[in-house]
Length: 537
Ligand code: DHE
Image (tube, rainbow, N blue to C red; front, side, top):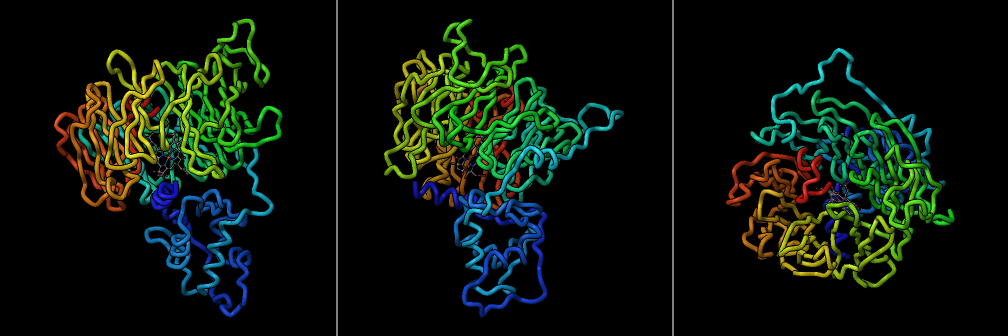
C-alpha cells in the first residue's frame, strides 16, 4: 500500500498548480525572524486571495487535507517556494523564509476549523450557464464521425483535446477545470459531455459547438460524476461534503443526498457513482458505511421511503427502487471501487484494507442488485482495481479480467461460478485494462511499478496467454482505449511532454503519435455510449 500511495502521490504532484490563478503578492516580505511563524496569518496575507479564506479554492485549487492527500510534502514545499511554471502560481522563496514556507506547507494539511461547508445555496450560486442561442444550427461545426471522437484529458496542463478517431487529428483543445478525475460522461446521443474535477466542478461541454454550456460546483472534494442513460440527470459523488448530489442535464440542483447510514448516526464519504442504464438508476458506493445505494431515475418507479424495505407487491427480487428514492443494500464491508456485469444485475466491488488493519489484503465481493445482498466473495489477493476491469466470453462462460494495484498480475474470474480461472503475470501492478468486441486481444499497463511502468502487456482473450509487449523505454505507458471499430488501440505516454500513441490493434505496431501534456485518460464516444464490454462506462 505504501508503494501504491507513493506512486499515486507522484501522479498527483502539482496539486498546488493554480490554473489561471495568481497568488496575492505583498510588497513587504514577512518577518523571517519570528520564532514561530504564524501560518494562518501568512495564508490570509499571501494565499487567501486565490485559494479562498477557508482554503476551499477559488481561482486557485482547494488546499484542504482531502485535496492534498495525494501530494508529497516535498512537492508542496517546492511549489510554495518555487511556484509552478505555465501557471500563475508564483514562487514565494524570495518573499517568505524557509521556516515560514515549512509552516505553511504543514498547516495547509491540517483540517480547516470550523469545517468548511458546501450547501444547496453554495451549489446554486456557483452555477453558470451559457445556453446555445436559439437560432444556432444544431449540427457539428467540424466534419468527422461524431461517434468516433476521442476526448483526451491532459493532466499536465489541465486541458482536454478532442480527437478525430479516423484521422487521428486534434479538432480542438480547450482548458479544463483543475485536476479532472474519472472518465468524462457522455449524453446518449454523444453530443454533450460532462467532466468532473477533484475540486468538485462539473463542466458540461457541447462537442458539436465546441463550447462550455454550463458549470456548477457540486462539492469541495469530488470523486466522479455519472450521467443517466436517458441523458436527463447527472449525479456527483463527493468526499467533502459527505453526499451525492443530483442535477438535471443543465446542471440545476435537483436533490442533495447526505451519505448517512439509515439510523443517521454515521456519515460516509461517497466512493463513486455509476449509471446503470438497463436498471434506469444510479448506483452509489459508500466508503465508510457498509451500504450500497441504488437511486432510480425511472419516472415510472413509484416513490418508496428510504430503507431496507422489500417491495412485497413484487416479491423480494425487485429491481426498481422508487423514483429518486434511495434503496439501500446492507453489506458486511463498505465497497470502494466497483464494476457491473454486462446485465447490470451484479456489482463486483473491492473493499480496500482499513487503514488500521495490517495489510490483511483487499477482499472483493459480488452483490446481486435484484435481491440486494452479497452473493459471493471474490478470492482476489492484493488490491483488484475492479473499476478498470473488462468482461469477455471465454471457454463457454463470461469472465472478468481486472488489473491489480498491488499484484503484478491480471486476475481472471468466472462470472458464473465467481471462481478465479487464471492469474496472468505482468511486469508490475497496473491501473487500466481495455479491449473491444472486435479484437481478440486485451491490453493492460503496469504503471504502478518502476520496473514495468513503460510496458503494455497484450493478452489473447482466447487463450489467456500473454502474446506481446509494447514498450516506451523509461517512460510511463498507460491507459488504453480503442477506436469505435476496434482496429486501433490508443495509449498514453504519461509524461509532461508525453503523447497519445496509436497502435494497430492487430499487428501492435505504432501508426501515429500525437504530442500531449500528460494525457491521463482518453475516451471514445461510441465505446462509452454503447457500453462496450471492453471499456469502462
Ligand atoms: Fe482514479 C477513474 C478512484 C487515483 C486516474 N478512479 C476512477 C474511478 C474511480 C477512481 C472510482 C471511476 C470513476 C469514473 O470513471 O467515473 N482513483 C481512484 C482512487 O480511489 C485512487 C486509487 C486514489 C484517489 O485518491 O483517488 C485513484 N486515478 C487515480 C490516480 O492517481 C490517477 C492514476 C491519476 C489522476 O489523474 O488522478 C487516476 N482514475 C483515473 C482515470 C480514470 C479514473 C484516468 C478514468 C479511467 C477510465 O478509462 O474510465
